[in-house]
Image 1: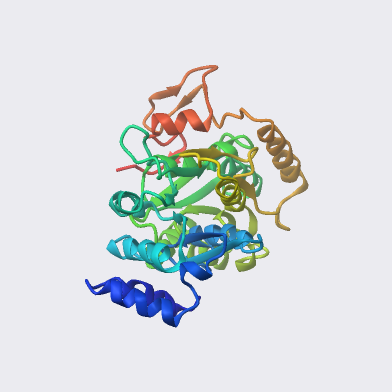
Image 2 (image 1 turned 60 degrees about the horizontal axis):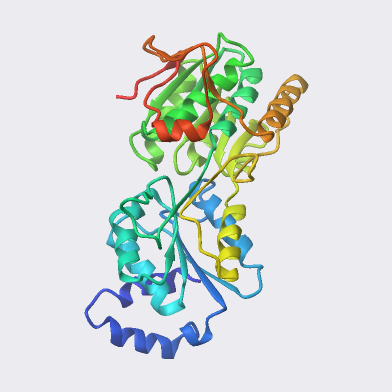
Length: 375
C-alpha cells in the first residue's frame, strides 16, 4: 500500500458525500468486499513502520500474518491520535472489508476506537494497552499487552556487568505506571549484579520528541552514566546518541542492534506476532475473541534481543540463568525488603509482586537508587 493510497482513505470519508466517493472507489480499485480475502485485518500506527521502536514492533507482528493463506492485511502509518484514526478505521471496514482492527497507539482508544465499536458492532477491535473494562466498554472491543518489565530487568543484568561508573541512565517519556515499572526493573536487574549501582532518569514529557531525547541522553552521559536504556516510542535517537558518546545500550520495543552493533548489549522486545496469530486463529475458527489478553516472556509475548559482543561471559551466565527462572513463571521483579526513592517502604521482607499484580495496583513510585522524580 503506497502512501498516496493511504492518504486517499481518509480523504474519501471527509465529506458528507463519502457514500458516492466509496462507490467510485470500489469501481476504481480491486479492494472491495467482493475481492476481499476470507479474513481482512487492519493495523494502524501512530508513527512510521520502520521507526526501530514501538510501531516497528507492531508492524513486524502484522507482517507474519501476511504469510497465512486466506488472511489479508491492510496497514496505515503516521496516523495521529485524532479523528483521523476514526476515518482510517472506517475506511478499512468500508473499503477493505476488515473484520478485525488493531489501532495500536495508546491515544486511539478513547474516544476514537470506542466510537467505531458503537458504529460497527459486527467488527472486532483490539487495542494495545490496559484500558478495556468489562463494566463500561463494549464486547466487540478489548485490550492486549505484555509484561515487559522482566525484559527490562534482564537489560539491567547486562547493564550491571557492563557499567564501570556504577551509574546507568534511563530516558523516559512520561511517568505512567508501565514506564515507572520499566525504570525500577532496569535498576533492580543491575543491582542484582552490584547493589551500589544507581540509575538517573530524565523524563522528556512526550512519547516522540527527538530533540529532547538527544538532550536527555547527552545529559545522562555527562553525569557519568555509561549504560543507557529508554521508554520512548522510537529509541533510535537515544541509541545513536549514546553510542556516539561511547556508552553501552540496552534496547526497547524492537531490536536496535543494527544501529550500534558494538555498543548494543541486549534489548527488551515485543513479540506481537504471537498475539496477533492467536487473535486471527480464533477469528478464523469462529471462536469469540478474548477481551483481556496478557502474557510475558514465558508466554511468548515478550522476547530479548541477542546478546551483543560487549557482553562478558559472567554477564551471559547470569543473564541466561535469570531468563531460565523467568521462563518457569512466577518470577518477581519487585520484592522486599524494598523502599522507594523517598525512603518509604513499598515491599516488606518476603513480600513479592508479579507484574500482573503491579499492573492492577498501578505503580506510582520509583525505587531507592533511582535519581529522578515522577513530578
